[in-house]
Image 1 (cartoon, rainbow, N blue to C red):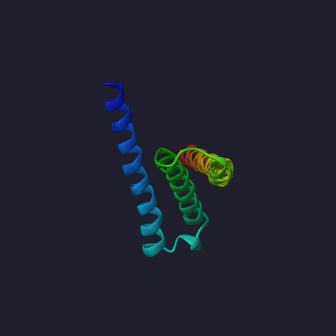
Image 2 (image 1 turned 45 degrees about the vertical axis):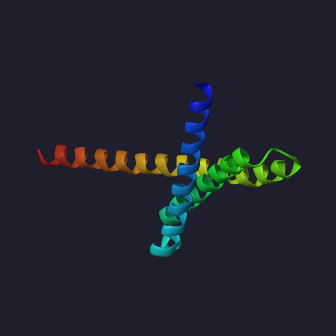
Length: 112
């Protein structure tokens, strides 16, 4: 039973990796992601996720060795940066929405 669960998990990692890489390829081919800050962020986020999943899939197929340490370092080097970038975007969006809501309430109070 444990072996079947492990195999199912490995298959899901593989399928998820293929889909993540496909997202990067399709985004690269069909979108002008480099034109906006949010487009650059989304593309970078997708790429780092695809790279991390690719590493995990590769690790399932090829045993760990010294090569793995270098590839792992490269794969995860971008992850803290892109996640901090995502947090910054979320907070900026929240602040902008809060300012707009405050302005709307102020405008309503003035109208009454």
